[in-house]
Image (cartoon, rainbow, N blue to C red; front, top):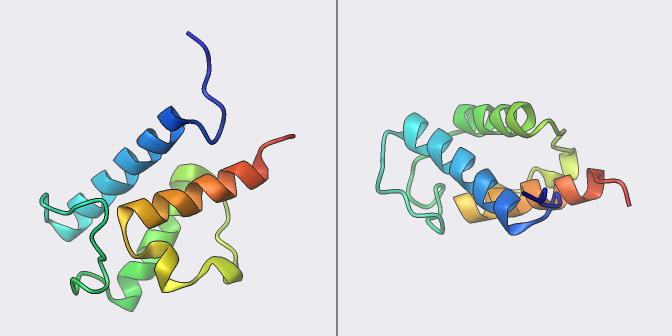
Length: 94
């Protein structure tokens, strides 16, 4: 079996699964959709936002930089996965 590149479809799907599992567990809502805005839905406060950043950094072995700390980047499973993919792509050797 061939390994997927950092930004491959399998990596993206795995990132989404991990992010979704964390959010469903922490928010106690298994009906959360990948495109649902967790801020608009009222799920997130400032403490949880920091927990989310800590989860992302620890799970995906990356640093979330100050310029990444925009609500839009953390608003949904899809947006968080896109941020992780972009950061992972920037870390990959070329």
